[in-house]
Length: 163
Image (cartoon, rainbow, N blue to C red):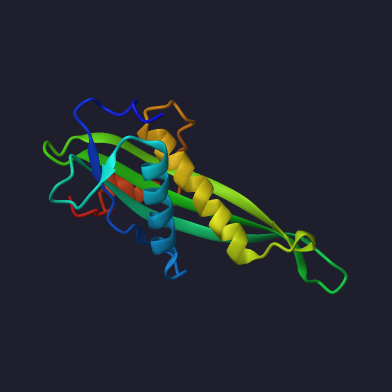
């Protein structure tokens, strides 16, 4: 990887992702995971918006926790954590969209293995960061459909990213 980005793009700004969920501070964790993944897996230089060739804007649309199994005391023993994010990567000089996608990632927490919600959330964000960077690299990763509850926002242009 690292050389599959557009030839005129050498740097990227990654502002803190917006967070439309009730789960506070997840935007910081996901943004950091994305920046770390970009630095590790690409040749892009992460810099401030004023110096960058491109800008990656992200919005956390949905975080959900689902109990898969419970024990006899009705405590969750297996839990799924799912995160959905909208990303928009654009050329900072022209304003042209390079990539716009909605992506979802799910991780599982199994109490018997000592896992908890925090570790599973970290895993989901790391996997989601990998998926985001994979998309930045131009790979034809399975593009996720826009969620039905979000589609009207796209149609009415209510998703305001400040660009």
